[in-house]
Length: 241
Image (cartoon, rainbow, N blue to C red):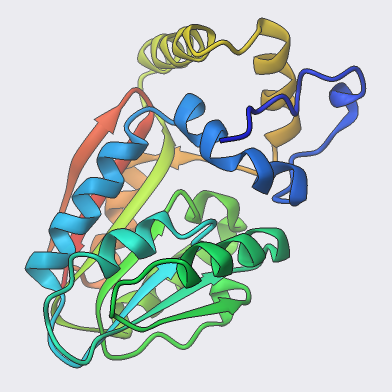
């Protein structure tokens, strides 16, 4: 696992965050040190795949990065004739994801697609995962994205949505941000690295409140919506059609 030093170099202060080769090279370390609860969410995605994936249906990993959620589904699907589509618009992530998936010996077919998730035709889906992806889409596209996911899912299917969120209470928001930064320091990020990355990702990752996410999922038509995992301002929701 290559160590994330992207925002430690002298020229890092002028960078805008991109999912390029540099980020792909250190992505597992970056995720492990930056997103609390990420590993737990991946394990739980596998558990949900065992329970909710239906025979002869499709599963989608929208914004697959290196394929962690794809592998979690692939290793836990027991129903026959299922197929996984893993989609990402980053060429660097897709290249590495292809290598990782090709070295895996599970039997469920995986199709890795280089594309914008907004352009994917979602149909006959019993499980859809967006693991920290929606908050990178423009705000104006998010309602339509969730509606298209709902329309493409089969009754009884499950949607997993993981996001960084804002808290409606400003004091709690401040507390959670500070706690998150403390955790990053414990994981050996410097104050300068934390500050630089926050500036680099501003206006690229645009979080919304949990209230807005729940309302959007309900508006799309999902019958059951709930948070199933939370650590500071990082949450994962499940929505069942």
